[in-house]
Image 1 (tube, rainbow, N blue to C red):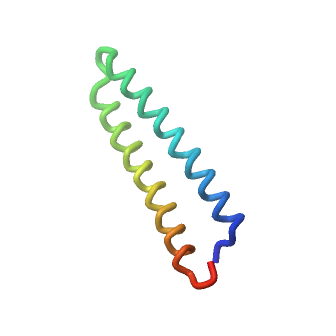
Image 2: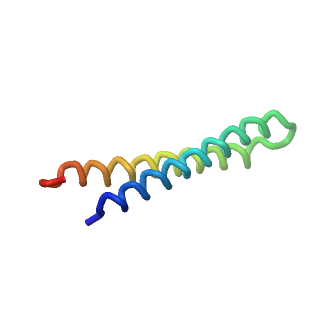
Image 3: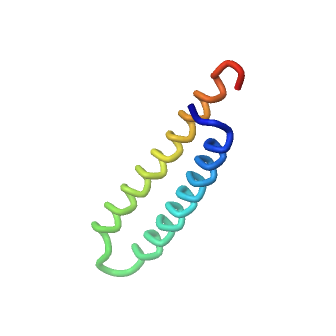
Length: 72
């Protein structure tokens, strides 16, 4: 079972991960404006989106389990 410190660590690191993914996504948008970068950037953008959704799902699941635990 995760304790409060574990949850704080998870939330902070997942937030940092999400921030980094957003920065990568913005860089992809800028690079897409350059000629000849299409398909590889599309794939990168798709993977970044998947990683972002996964990190949010991880936080949602862990926090919902902790909050639903009696005595939490």
